[in-house]
Length: 253
Image (tube, rainbow, N blue to C red; front, side, top):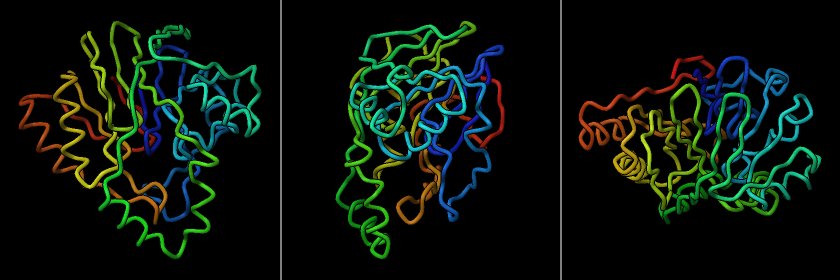
């Protein structure tokens, strides 16, 4: 099983000739770092798109990706309705609830219950101050057009391995099986490094791949220094493998 990080919470997961996308957000603004040169046309081969929740940095490009591929979209009922309102045909949408599963080629995909991280007051204040000159523009990316909906995590099994992906750093349910790779988001709170490290401690994966730490849409976003996260994870789980992804680099799981 191979993967590549697409920026924010986005990943392409590949097994054999089958490719699936998770939270694929490609349309970053010109100030975003790292830049994302790929577009929807680069994923015409995708067979499925998994969506954790409905925020713009997880769903903005889904309609265009559906146009340029034959992929079906798996998401909560609220997110499916939001995508339908943005032009995705209902025939391409598959609403999922926690516990439901689907097989796509060699992949067995299970929706799991999750929740969105709670923004702390300090983060809200500093973000509003940073965005004070762009609020009218950024309002178009808010939850009225991109509702959060029910939040899902995804357990993905292939080639004898299990991968866990979260789109936001909060979950009340812990997998009852070995997790070979945990794709954990590090964004959404001023104390996010400690929050994400605590999730790793609960899941106890063999490999940790942090994501969503990039400056994907400044000034709304900010780059997260991963060093405190890496240090905390190593203190809690000595010897754990951690791999910080490089955007668009294809890696073996």
